[in-house]
Length: 296
Image (cartoon, rainbow, N blue to C red; front, side, top):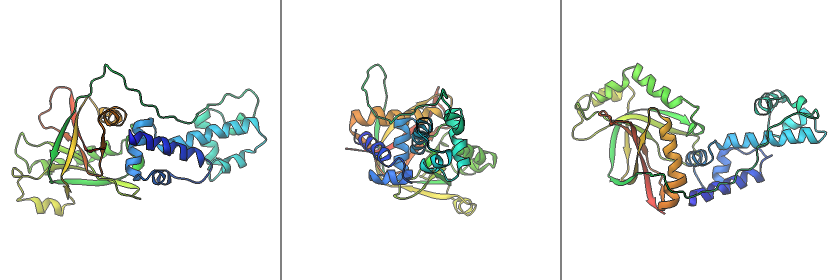
């Protein structure tokens, strides 16, 4: 429940500073969260990113101002956070479906976007299976890339799926799975721990390094751009993500913050979280999601 309360505090902060030059990093800092964790929790809880929320609120208020006051389009653009009238007009038209000049006419139809209020309701009839498992330190060999925090839980962004497609097309995944024996070639999607003031997070596609891993070619693969990824000992909440595509991962993250964390008292820690894509797929199982947790 603590994370939900922090998100509500963040919304209050955004509302208080709505017409100031604030960024999502500043909002995250106001509630003492890393921008990475803030993005993930906010988007899972609110269904949009903090940047989208700020933009929608400002454009909503701009529409009201243009329709009810004598403010000019140029002044509205600068007042509501845009560098030029042109960029303001484009964003305004996408949001409202009319131009700022048309909005000043009587009878123009505008879109209203009010302040968010986060409410958690506990309802029965929906089972969320989970298990808590302890993992000691682990090592992986992975292809790693940095991604901006803004894409976390953004279902419309395909940067990470495209990364998977690129690695498969270049046979990079085959190079690391070949280090594992047949039947034990599970793939891990690794997300880096949160770091304060960082605008990007690392995502890796890798395989575990253990007693079954052939390390004789490890140096060769590392020389080709692969990375050793190490994790600290941690407790994990483990969830099965079922479905035909990656949307089930975002849905599970949303349920983690809205249902699992408030009801169990577990909170996410600043350790690597990961998905496991099993070589031997179970019917309907897309992946397992492992979230590092601790009791609040």
